[in-house]
Image 1 (cartoon, rainbow over the protein chains, first blue to last red):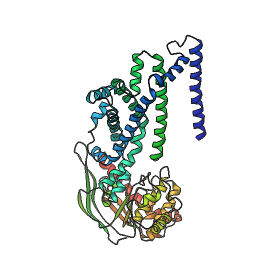
Image 2: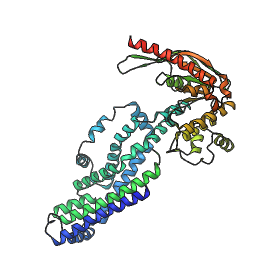
Image 3: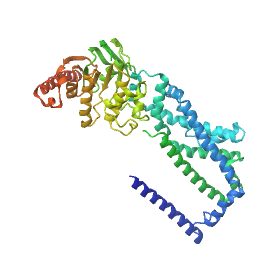
Image 4: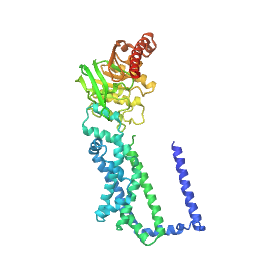
Length: 249
Length: 248
């Protein structure tokens, strides 16, 4: 199994590398890819991002708000899990609204929040925490609908307290609740960047805004590749941490 | 371990479906369950056995009749009930405050020595059942209810655990077994209550004291087979009546 996984990773790496090589050859030597920036320009633009757009500081703000926001969101859910279990178990249709809201485009919430609050890092952090907690309500309610009854029945025969029972239900639900954390992580990145783009004040979103204003096509591309790479690293780390902390099914 | 008996007197249980129709699951169930024995409730699946056992364990309430139970009753369901996020040791100590010596002896008793720090996730159902059993023993339960616990196990696990339950019973532990397996009930229990199809009603009580001396070889003996056939005939008669009622 392990060998198969290593083989699979090797193949994926090979595919990525082949595409990169193809892009460099076709982009530099032929006009076929003239709808994309040339590889050399993309590379130059990548380095200029750090100087011209002050990318390091902006990236720091965005990554700080995304990951601290997700961490705080998880912390809030874990601390209030007892209340959540009690409320959601007895009010099965209370979160139907949240189910509908998930079809709303991400930028709607970002714009709405920027209307309500002045642009600042704190406001951005609050926005991430609120967005994350709200998004998580749907998987939480779905998980609570499929609680393992054998745990509950057995616990009830031990005459456990209500809070202990809630804790058991939450523990049983945790793998299901956090199973889509990487997808939500990507969604949070998108929300934050839209929020920053609208605010034009700070973060990677504001770099996008400036690049757009200057018609810096190459910066747009190199930034996208960099962000994709960062989200991929973040994704891998989240899965790693999740699998370490929630190692049961 | 207490010496008090669990008494069920004309116990009934009704459910109501989504449109308010009454569904009678149990009807006039009367029984006396004595300590230091294995008592079985034998019935096909879907006859209200689990509801009855959950009522005895205090997990569900009954709609009518009386239940007199002053004992600590632990319910072990057919699906694994040990928590996968805790180790074997932590599972046993959950809800229990026992000494290290007691813990060690219980772990040894149920055959989990060497697995104290293992987590039960991805382990066999038999392994997880041993943890639940150890937890119930550590809780000093007067009665341990086993609701179809053997139904999902492999044949090897089943045989090992039958012997474990018999051994524990001889040491003074009391078990109430819910099963749809006639051989299992006959092999393990000294008293067997046969339940009818829904609504579950006691149709017969069988004294089976010789079960204490049964070995696995006894299952193939004529006496055992004859007892098994008798029970089968009772069920056949009961269910043909139900079938007749349904077809009319």
